[in-house]
Image (cartoon, rainbow, N blue to C red; front, top):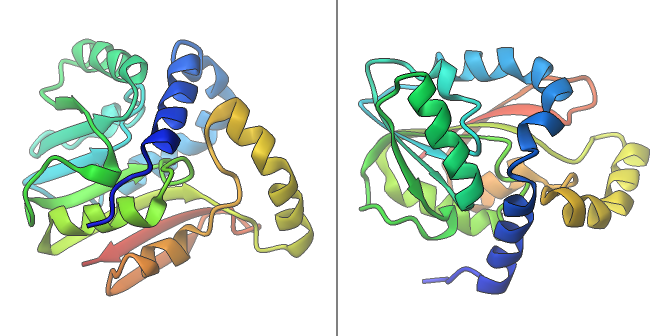
Amino acid sequence: MTQPDQRATERTRARYQRISGLYDLMEILPERRYIPWRENLWEQVHGPRVLEIGVGTGKNMPFYPPEIEITAIDLTPGMLARAHKRATELDLNVNLQLGDTQALDFPDKYFDSVIATFVFCSVPDAVLGLREIRRVLKPAGQLFLLEHMRARNSALGLLMDVLNPLVVRMMGANINRHTVNNVQAADFKKADVTNLSADGIFKYILAYK
């Protein structure tokens, strides 16, 4: 079994720990665009057992369906502390845990659905993380993703490639990932992809085990 690169994982954790106190403030403007996308995605999620990968500060929590059992993990203690606070404010019953999607601490075939929003831009080994998700999904389980990735336009894509090392160091997120390809490389048998922007940067991905 492939093991995560611990040094890469610790770098990612440190970057997000550093900005955890400012993260919501940094995201105020783009989040206005993301809110309806988050809400729409959560309307499609089915339980009874659901795993949210990369809960962050809990931005998806207002859209949690009330009838399902949700476990939510994050790599970073600072982010998870803010998620705990938001869950308390919303009076939610959610199982919040520190965790790494590259090495999930759950049994095989355990969850009915797994969901992640803007997470696989920052997972050090995205394919490994997606394979772990596939492992913990039930045979009829589905993976719901809302992601940003490299633009289809060659000039814009090249610019994203050039800027990516700086953005990763500052923010932790890669802006030039090929997430649809990564889902396919993780052996999901089918992936339905919906473009949310004309440049192809923002997408819904619904993957079937």
